[in-house]
Amino acid sequence: MVPKNHPRYKSLMLREKIEKAYKEGILADAGMIAHGRGEAFDYLLGEKTTKPAKNAIQTAAASLILAENPVISVNGNTAALVSREVVKLADILNARIEINLFHSTPERVAAIEDVLKKAGAEEVLGTESEPSELIEGLSSPRANVSLVGIYKADVVLVPLEDGDRTEALVAAGKFVITIDLNPLSRTSKKASITIVDNIVRAMPVLIDAIKHLKRYRVEELRKLIVNFNNSENLEKSLKKIIENYMKSDVGS
Ligand code: PTJ
Image (cartoon, rainbow, N blue to C red; front, side):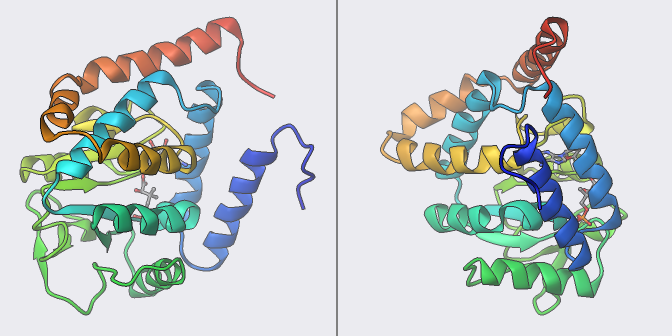
């Protein structure tokens, strides 16, 4: 049990969640490593939602509101950390939730479906019980997507993604939003919008932004999207890391 006054309480609690999810068969083995890499970047970001992240979140919210067929793609780490928020987000957007795994096994798909259903999801796509299609240019099991989910989607939220799939989704004409703590990753560079933040902080902010921006006119939302430049915004995230490092303003 981590004492509440521990300086790294929040981070250690996330580790506990990740460990538990691993033992429950939700997380891939590599999910632990991916989490560790995320922790390192989060440390350098000062474990805060930065200004560029907030900017990306606003734009992501606008894109998701304007989407005709928004889909939230869920992997092991996402299910382990933010299953309730995924369901909340899907509810307010009327979006579909789809499980899509890199290290896919029927057991993991079932365990993740169970977590999402327990979090309140009524429908979970990406299970073996519905028709699937192939996204071109991918050799991993991630190429298999639901016909009524990612295949048909215009906007896809794919947190903690790998570069190949982001690239393939963009090539398939999708508007791809990712959440990735690493501003240097291929996913971050290839996505239409990259939120460089910890998924546990970004999701509640994204949900609030959607609630707020839903009142805006379509033209105002479009303007937010047109004015956003992902490469420039990524550079700002990277600068934040460098600034923190130079000031030794991180760490506890
Ligand atoms: O559940 P599966 O089988 O689909 O596998 C999922 C993982 C995450 C193992 C797989 O997609 C993978 O190997 O991903 P990568 O290539 O390691 O990329 C994961 C990215 O997520 C890295 O750039 C990490 O920095 C980032 N990351 C890790 N934890 C978080 C995060 N970003 C936001 N919030 C986090 N909590």
